[in-house]
Image 1 (spheres, rainbow, N blue to C red):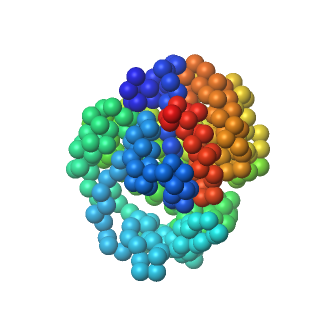
Image 2 (cartoon, rainbow, N blue to C red):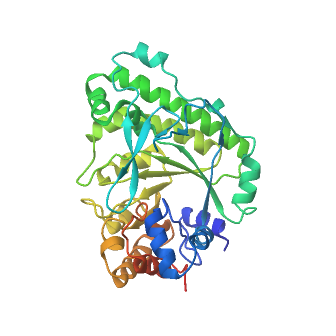
Length: 356
């Protein structure tokens, strides 16, 4: 099978020649550098290897919008299309971009939202999408995916985490206006992307972290009322163009599984089995015939702190459990973090059948 055939067959709940594979969010630079040294290769060579072994290729539209958005600043910070500013924060192993300015933090009424400059689909050039699909997808050899939107997250990135949750309970009209505005942008962006692709995009990546380590971040009724309908709108657009919806959430989300299925997702990602009540067997039994799965190899425990033998055992267990009768793409549960032993990355890729 070609990588694309492998992905699409698995997502139709049929077994494939070998397990479909993706690197998901990839390998953070310090871990990749250490892995390159371990493999005695230049990091550019490692990038080429990692690109080839993933069955999914990512594409995106070219940004042509205002110069004060989607731009880096001289102090190392970055402002995204929503006007959210992120600044570099170092720990002892890596640098992460953390939100340093929430542009809607001090807004108190809808009139202020109406006067704010939200991104528009016109800020992107979609004319190059067919050529990008052709080159990135290697003329149909790889499955092609684009990012279609993270609705709740984009809203709270602008508003602030605590304020957004307060709004959901106490300022419902305000939060509904904001969530609708965000959804409308992602719908128009997605529509233009899929029209430009002319049926040649296979997967649309959507996201919203709705779970923490010990359970949902919301009550289930609040999520059903305030967040789920917006994703349902977006998912209907995606399905209308024949693409499948990949939905990312971290955390403990078993309680929302029925709602996620009803929301119209095709693939649940990233499968954080270190979180409370997240169980591969239970997940496959409850939803295996209804949706597919992507991820699961722990970047929280096994990859950073296990042995190579434990990494291999986890990979084989997930393939056996989630891959039965198809419906599974093997991948890490998120980005492989700095400090992950390179021998564990090697064990992961070898157990996946991607390295000798």
